Each structure stands twice: as C-alpha cells, then as structure tokens.
Length: 295
Image (cartoon, rainbow, N blue to C red):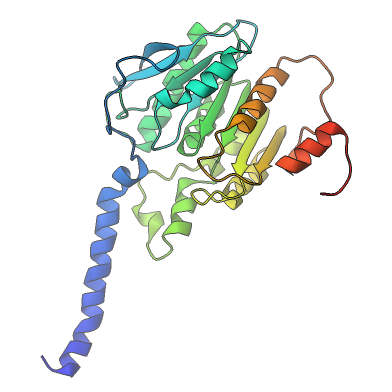
C-alpha cells in the first residue's frame, strides 16, 4: 500500500474505530452503570433486620431488609449505590436501632434477591413501591436516604411522595452530567439511556434536606453535589467531609449526621442556627461548639 493511500485511509480507520467505541459503550452501558445487578444471589440469612418483599406495580418482586423502629420516630428508607447491596448496611441499621429508628433497605430490580432488570424507569418505580410499602408498615414519617446512584431514586421518590426529610450521600447533579465529565470525547447525551436528571426534580423537594459529600470523591465530584445543592430549595444543609472520598464516607461521622438529622425532625427544642448553607466538617464542628475562630 502506498504512503499516499495509507494516509487517505487513516481518517476512515479512525472513524470506524471511534464508532466501534461508541457502539461498545452504548450496548454495555447498563452493565457499567449497574455493576451490582445479578452479581451474586441474595444471602440465605439476613445480615440484619427482617427479610421482606415488595411488589411493584409492573409485577416485579423486590427483596429488602427491614428493621422496625419506634412509632413516634421517622423511619429511614435507604436506596444504595450501583455496586452495593442491602446486606452491607448492618452498621447503619444497628446504629439507628440503638436510637429506636427503623430502616428499610431495598434491593433494586435485577439486584440480588429481586426480579427483573435494572434501568432508570424501573428503579424509580422501585423507589415509589418501597415508599408505599413502608408507609403501610411504619407509624410515623419516612426519611428518604439515597447514596450515590440511589440519590437519583431518593430525589424522585421524595418529589412524588410525602417524605418528611431527605438525605443525599454523594449526590450528583445528574448521571448525564457525571458521564459527560468522565467521557468528554463521546456524545453522551445521545447515548445515555438512564440520565437520572435530579437537577430537574430537586426543586420539588420542600422537605428538610441534608447533603453529605466527601471532598476527595473521585467517582462523583464534589462540584456535582454542590451544583445540586445550589438548585435545592430551603430548608437545606450540606456537610463536606474534608478527608473522605466516595466509599470511606460511610463511617461513624456520617452515621452521626444521619441520626442527628432524623432526630431533629421530631425534636421540639430550639434549632441550632447552623441549619442552612454549605459547610465543611470542620466548620460544622466549630459552629456546634460556638467557636467563631478561623481554622
């Protein structure tokens, strides 16, 4: 092959290679977005709580774990991240149970113990079904807690059901915006099947809202969570954990903030003036102890 002909073929070869990458991403995107789906069977023995099943309006059967709390305290409804599973939240269930707060963690369709295949519309349906199931069980209000991918489910659920509070751990503006940042060389807006546009729904959430994010998060950048926070109406509060990333945010500090938020919803004592705004972990601690000094 002559050099001239080879040079003429290069653009065509590059275009074919690019289209192959686009096709690969398009057809494999759900396996990338939902890595925990169907990975392993449900545990035979519950790691915490009671195994329950929730029927969705479109005929799927979801497995969940449920720990009942006191009827005079809100119950937490948990939507986990994309590679997670309900068994992993024994630490949260036990900490909540110690304060007589209940917890329901639901396994999305296609995830261990649940039927079906995951997709945005399916997961949003799962969220509504879980809320309705819990409403029939719990004697008090429901606090919706979403983590990572689950924040999109939590925002949609709270926009369509009367949650008394919303907690978003490592939230994103939208899955679309995160994908655009991660794959700037791809036409993500045309390819993505499940954009999870929390940015278009957060304005409907009039409930008290707590945003928790790690400053070192390299999966969902802090900037994405901050952008969603700015769009959210009052009342709202954001806590930024200076030394935490995406996975190590699940620690005693986070659990303490979750419990404090839930208990404050039924607390009749005067609220601390630090209830709104974006604050780092250090700033929150200084405010609670009454210090006004600089770091």
